Length: 557
Image 1 (spheres, one colour):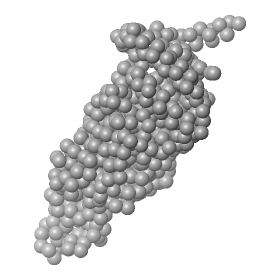
Image 2 (image 1 turned 90 degrees about the horizontal axis):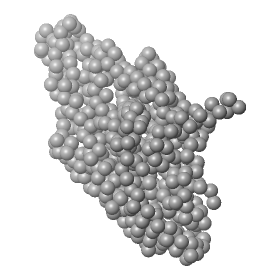
Image 3 (image 1 turned 180 degrees about the vertical axis):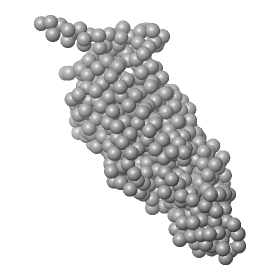
Image 4 (image 1 turned 120 degrees about the vertical axis):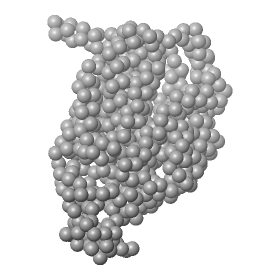
C-alpha cells in the first residue's frame, strides 16, 4: 500500500503517517469504498450545515447595507413623492465621485414656503443637513432605516461586521477545544443549533444594541462550524480522496452565499432574511443522532469500541466486507500510537521562533492580507455599480470553479508560484478597477470577479501551504497563530466600507496594495511541492536548503 498523505495538503508520502493510525485506517477505508452509500449519506448530512454556515457568516453584509436615500425637500416633495423627481436637479447636491444624489444634504432655500419649488430659490453654494427626514429609492427594510442609522452614524453599520467576526474569534478556539473533547458531530450540532436560536431571536430585536449583542453571541456558536465540517469531510475518506474532498466541500459554502443573495433580493427585509435562513438551521441538533462520529476522533480518544462499530456499519452500508482480524489489528496499532504519543509529546514552538522567525512573520502577514482582501471584496461588492444582489451572487459563483482549479494549480506550478501568481493577478485586477468609470460596469465587474477568483484560490492555497512549511510537532500551534492574524484581517474588513464614504476607490486601492505586497512576500517562502512534510523544527528549517543543494549537484553533474 502507498504511504499516506497528510490531510489535504498533497499526495506525497509522509513518514510521520507511517506509524500513525492512518496506515491501518486508510487501508480499511479503501476496502470499505471511497464514495459508497455510507460516505454519500454522511456528506449529505454535512452539506446543509456548510450552506448554513455561509449564510450565517455573510448575512450581515445585507443586513447592514446602507439604503439609498435623499433628503426630503419640504418646498417640493409631497406625501407621494419618489426618489427621482425633477426638482432634485436644483435642490439636492450630487456627489462628484459617483454622480449620485447626496444622501445627507440639500441646498439651503432662500424662502421656505411650500410654493417656492423653483431653481432660483436655492443657494447652490450653501448646504444643510436634513436629520432623518429622507425619501428612499427602494422598498427595503434593513437596520439602517429600521433603527435610523444614517450619515454620520453609519459607522455603526460597519461595527456590526467587526463585532460578528469578534464573536467568531472567541468561538473558534473554544470550539476547537470542545470538539477535541466532545467530538466533531456534537460541536456542529450544538454550534449550528445555538447560532440558529440566537439568529431567530435577533430578528425580533427592538434596538440596535440588542441586535449587536445577539450578533456576537450568534457568531460565537458559528465560529466552530466551518473548520469542524471540513475536518469531518476529510476524515470520511482515505488519503487517495482527500484532495477531492477538500475541493468539493467548500463549493457548498459558495452555494450558501448564492442562496443568501437570492433570498435577500426576493425578501429585502432584514428580519425575514434572518427568519427564513435560520429557522431550517434548527435541524442541526438532529445531527447528534443522524451523523456518525469521526472514526479518527474516536480512535484518538481511545474509544475503539465505537470506532469499530462505525467501521462495521460503513462496510455493511457499502456492501463490503472487513474482517474482525483487520479491525483488531487497527485497535492494537492505535493503542501503541497513543502510548507512544503520551511519552514523546513536546511543545517546541519556542525553538521554531528561533529557527525561522521570518517565515512565521511572513505567514502571518499573508494570512492577514488574504483574509482582509477575501472578506473585503464580499463586503464591498454591494458598492459596485449595478444591482448589489447580483454583484454579490457573481462573486460567490466564481468561487466554485476556483476551488476546482486549486488542485490543478498546486500540482502544476507549485505552492509558492501559485500563491504569488494568484495574489499578483488579484492585485492587478483590483488596481485596474480604480481607473474604470462606473459607466463601464461590465468591465469593472469582470475585473472584480477575476480578482475574487484569484484571492479564493490564494486563500485555499495558503491553508495547504501553512500545513507544509511548519513541522508536525508544532504545526497546529503555528497554524493557529497565523490564522489569528487572518481573523484580525476579517475584523478590519468591515471598516473598509467606511473608506468608500470618503473615496469610492479607497477600498480597491487598499486591497490591491495588500494583495501585491503579500504576493511578493510569498516568493520568500520555500517551495514544498513533492517535499516530505517535516516532523521536527530542524527538518522544517532545512526546507528549501535541501532543494538548493540538489539543484547545485545536478548542475555540477
